[in-house]
Amino acid sequence: MCAEPLEVVEIGGRRRMRCPACRYVHWRNPGLGAAVVVFDEEGRILLVRRGPEATRSGLWSVPAGFVDYGENVREAAARELEEETGLIADVGDVVQVASNFHDPAKLTIGIWFSGVVTGGTLAAGDDADDVGWFALDALPPLAFDTDVDLVALLRRE
Image (tube, rainbow, N blue to C red; front, top):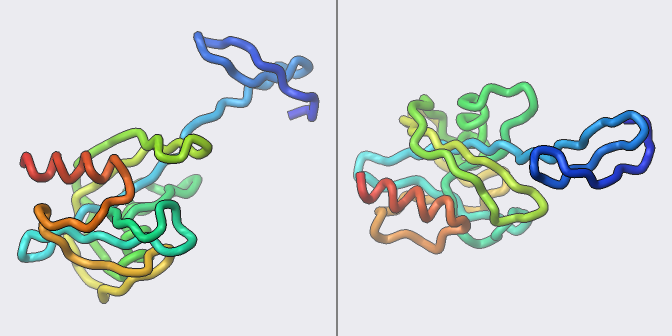
């Protein structure tokens, strides 16, 4: 806050960065992601293939993205679904909450919501270069362990 170089101190049993002059603590918190899990009338889950500029390019995931500062988490989930798939959905209950450790430089917490498609036209967009419906027992390679865990949860249910 005052431009003094930060020092490493222990606070709450963890190493934190703090300014020795003004005592400001830089809390390194994870980002928040939101996703919508939707199925078609045949019971297939909607997935997007991650585009060339996306993390884990070429692999598939549930449509998801970051929640913007000041944005409602359910609205963020619906926005990300529409940006990546062209579909509009009513966002429902929480299906899964999980920590994402796939990028150590940018840790996140994800919230996956159930959703029901209410409109739109299916088309890959934003950082997705393909989109499709898949049976839970015939999935393409998934990008993230959290999506693998989600599918395992859905198969049990």
